[in-house]
Every structure is written in C-alpha cells, then in structure tokens.
Length: 320
Image (cartoon, rainbow, N blue to C red; front, side, top):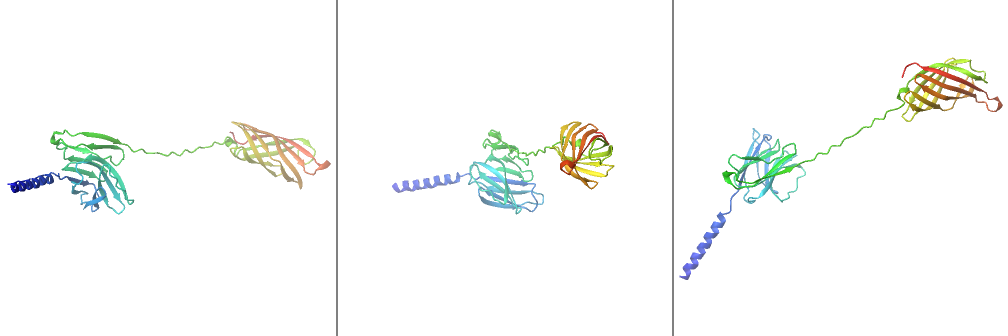
C-alpha cells in the first residue's frame, strides 16, 4: 500500500509540474510597418538582440509577428533606428533597460505602452508615429503613442486588462523638445559727418595782410571735403584756382546737424619756387557756407620770414 501512495504522489507532482509549465503565457506582438521604402530591410530587435527581419513590399508595407513571451506583461519603449547602410531597426526595449546606440544609426523614441498578448503595433516610418491596438484594449480601440516627425507630442502609456469592456487604465505623459534659436544682431554705426563727405565749397579768399607780396588781393578758392570718418578724422583738398596750386590737408571735424568746426594740419607747399607753410584756421561750416582763414608763412626762418593772411568765404555748390 505504501508503494501505491508513493507512486500516486509522484504522479501528482508530475501533473502539478505540467500545470505550472502550461501556465506560462505566450505573448505575441504583431508589428505592422507603413510608408517604408520599397525593397528596404526592416530589422526587429528586443532589447539588444535581433529577433527577425523582413523586407518592405512594393506598397511600402511590411508585417511581422514577434514572440515576446520572454518579456512578459511589462512596460516597453519603442524606438526606430535609421541607419546609414539603409536598414531600419524597430527596437522594443523593456522600460529601465539601456541599449547603447549604434553610431551609424539615428535613433528615435516613438513612445511606450504596457505589453499584452495579441497586441498590434503599427509604425509609420515616414511620419515617425506609432499606435497600438488589440490585447487588453477595447475592440476597435487604437491609441497613438508616437510623438511624430515634429518631435513634440504625447506619448501614451497604456495599461492592459479589461478585455472588450474598455476598463483598462490610460496614463498620459507629455514629452517636450526645446529648440534653442541663436540670433545674430548686426549693429549699424551711423556716421554723424556723412552729410559733409564729397561736398564742394567755392568762393574767394580776400587778402588781410601782404607781407610776402606774392598773392593777389582776392583769389578764387575751392575746398572739397573728401573723407570724414565716424571719429571726425578725414581729408580735404583746397585749390587756389588763380595760382593753380592744390593743398591736400588732413582734418578733424566736430559738431553735428548743419554746424561743424574743422581743424587742419600744417603742410609745406611750393608756390612759385618758394616754400611756404600752409594752415587753415577758424574753419567752420554752417549749412551751405564755409568760413575760414588761410595763413601762409614763407619758410625762410629768421628776419626774412614773411606772412600772408587771407579770409575765406565759400558757398557750397550743393545743398545739405
């Protein structure tokens, strides 16, 4: 009798073991690919391991049924990786797992959901969106889990259970990508002396003193403002028309609006075979009128030096 009991106990244990083994639920996930490039390769991976591949058909679609029993009913994240060799990898990663990125592929996270048997995962590889249906969701119910090509959207994490009754739980998590825009500002510096550049003034110089006995009582004179920089530095050209002599001067301008004061350097100029120092003083431009004093010093030194002084009154050939 003892032997029978032992044999029966062994049978019971064997039966119990069979019940536990059959209780391991098989999980299948159908993956549907849309809008792919005809003829291109689609690989499927679970965590870091490749589990299958297929080829996009002429209509841009592909379908594969994956055995995900080894994962169980866990929350998974969906990634699409586009690689430089033309492959597209659909990677299913158990939440909390880390899979290093392939430097030759560009990885995009589409969303996450709670895995259940009989689910269908539909991925648009052009729009980079994904949706899930089936499993514990209500019949005909589809839930978008992908952020889309714009990179800003909503990832829905779907809770299983409830069958056709629709009693499952849905939690919404918002993922936002911040775009940083760099703005380059160009600062334009306005030249306060712009109105003077290129202006020409013509008139006469009237002799005030005549120690050198060289110039006439009055002399036709033209002054052209060639350049003026934003700091006031610039150049002018003065021409004594009667004598046919040109005086190039460096200048410095101050003022604003229509009134400007000008100082010049002292230059050495040859007139009639004689060397003179030339300087323009008391130089002012007021609107269209230029007034100044032209001073000449014959550069002989000692008691033989002589000085001539002309008062200039010139008018602009064009208005401000």
